[in-house]
Amino acid sequence: MMLNASISEAMLDELRQSLASKMSPKRYAHTCAVEEMVGRLCALYCPEAKMELRAAALLHDLTKEESLQNQLQMCREFGIMVRSEDILAPKTLHAKTAAELIRRDYPSFATETVVLAVRWHTTGHADMTLTEQLLYLADYIDDSRKFPDCVRLRDFFWGAHPEGMDEASRLAHLRDTLILSYDMTMRNLLAESVPISPDTVLSRNDLIAVREGVRAIT
Image 1: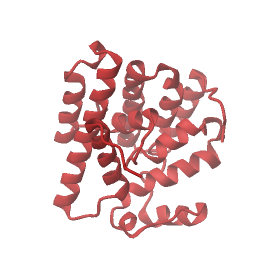
Image 2: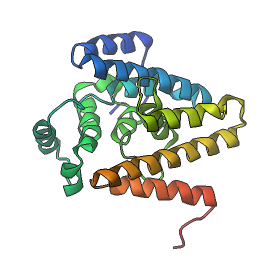
Image 3: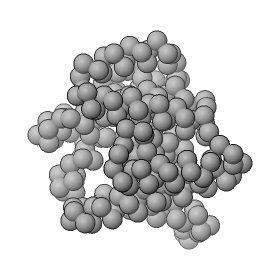
Image 4: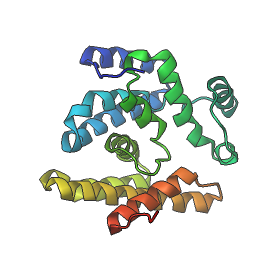
């Protein structure tokens, strides 16, 4: 894994061209929209990570269109533990397999920031880094998303005009937006009677604890 980011616009252009031939037109359009959205979010929260997160956005759905059989085969090849809830809710698998594929096939982009943002962009996890949060959110609210919950979350985030907030308020707004996203996701999964990733539950609980100023007692 790369220790330092050295990602250039030329590298992103080349990556974009390569991915265009490997994805369906709909998936590629979404991928480019996530890249654009994460760039906007980085401008608000961490400009220094913009190039890495744009790369992560381009690579986040690298294996999304693979079949469940292929996903499971990649998990075996990479030594990824597969839980029962992963098989029953297979949409979560692509984040795990894509992260490992980046390490193997895209070493020029395999910084810790890129790999971990891709790894956690679907379920989240407790104590997420800021860069992980930004890719997760960008994937949820990019402008290609037309699902009612995505539109609602996009309006919630940008409608509060975070660009005009001070840093503390902007971070609190990001936290509240993520909590709302988890609420919507979990509500939909319950309606579909499919498992909820434990990582999603832990991530939501962690953010609520932060909001309420509660820390675990050890």
